[in-house]
Image 1 (tube, helix red, strand yellow):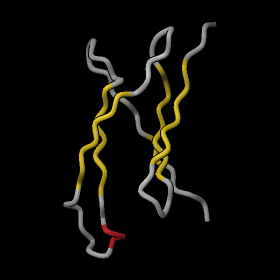
Image 2 (cartoon, helix red, strand yellow):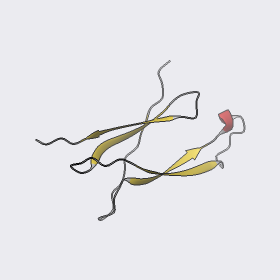
Image 3 (cartoon, helix red, strand yellow):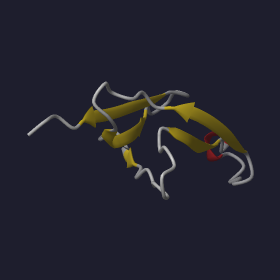
Length: 78
C-alpha cells in the first residue's frame, strides 16, 4: 500500500513573511463518526535560511499516527 502524501502551497501576500503559517488539522476519529467538525488550528514558524527564504514546503502525514513530516528545500545560489 502506498502512503498518502499531501502537498501544501504556502501563499505569500504582499510583504508578509510566509514563515508564520497556520495549519488546520482534522481529527475525524478514524472516520468512525464521519465528522468534519473537529478541526484544530496549529500555528508554526518555519525556519529561515541565512541567505533568505525557503522554497517548496511539503506536508506528509504519517499514516496511522498523529505525526506530520515537513519537508522543504532552500534555494541555493546560481
